[in-house]
Length: 144
Image (cartoon, rainbow, N blue to C red):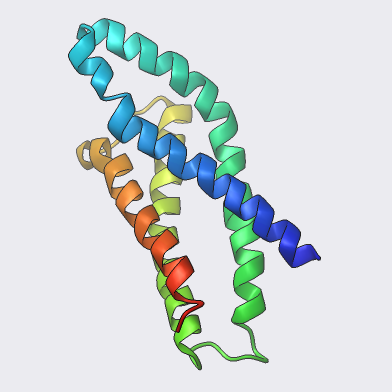
C-alpha cells in the first residue's frame, strides 16, 4: 500500500514538474514575441513567483517518492545490477541527478539573488529532454 501511495505522489509530482518545464520552454517563450521584453519578463516573473513556492516541494516529493520506489527494486537482497530493469533504473537515477543538481543550483541562485551561469538559460530545455527520456525509461524498464 505504501508503494502505491508513493507511486501516486510520484506521478502527480512528475506531471507538475514536467508541465512547468514544458510551459516554460514552449508556452512562456511566446511572450517574448508577443510583448516587449519588459512586459514579457513582468508576466514571467508573476508566474515564476507562484511556481517557486510550489516547485521546490514538488521536486522534493518527486525525489523522495522516487527514492522510495528505487529501493524496492535495487537493494542488498535483490542486487544492484542483476537485471535489465535495475540497469535502466540506474540510468534514470543519473539523469535525475543531473536535473536535481540543476534545480538546486537554479533555486540557490534565486534565493541568493545571484545570476546563474550563462548555460543555465537553456537548462529547462535540457531538463525537459532528460525528463522525456526518464519517462520513456520508466515505461521501458517494465518491458525488459
